[in-house]
Length: 226
Image 1: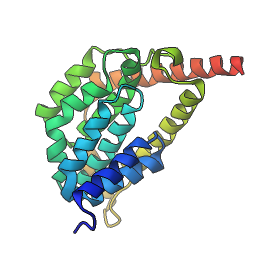
Image 2 (image 1 turned 90 degrees about the vertical axis):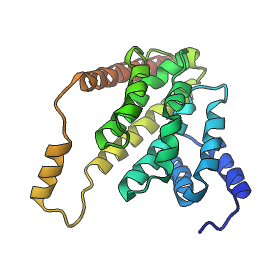
Image 3 (image 1 turned 60 degrees about the vertical axis):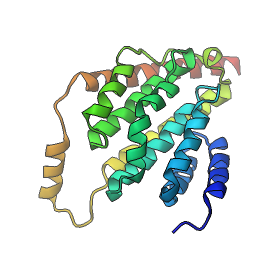
């Protein structure tokens, strides 16, 4: 049972979203609040959607990371409170994170990784994922520099570091298995959930390579200016 009323929850959550960064601890803290107060999910989701309407594009990706963490929690616990609400807004959320601007282009590779995770875990069915993947299909992404996105060099370095930490955590989470699972059950689980290498996999590999090259160029430029 929630110990705070909806109005107070909205104020607290909105303040947390205003101070959200791409650092994994802050994403976990904000998503944890949303999960704890799932009875107010519709109200809290409205807060997220309002923040997605803010003019500055790059920070919107952090809101998507919060949504991703909430969906992962629903998936692990078998609850659907948040998932059922997000299903209705999924396309609009992705549109808001990757508008057709340099800042939106810079978010495309990260969004593809998030969507790929949803697909791999079976969080959404094809009816939800198909229109989302269509939005991403013809977007190159990853080509924006500091001046295009409006981010300062220090912010870019910070974002690169946060991305690396988040990817590390995601890989660790992927390998976590139930304590009572036998090796045979683990093998069977991987066998059933691992698909053939397909076009989406090649696109994700290409995005990661492009993202690495972009980060390397930005770091080189920044180091020469220091």
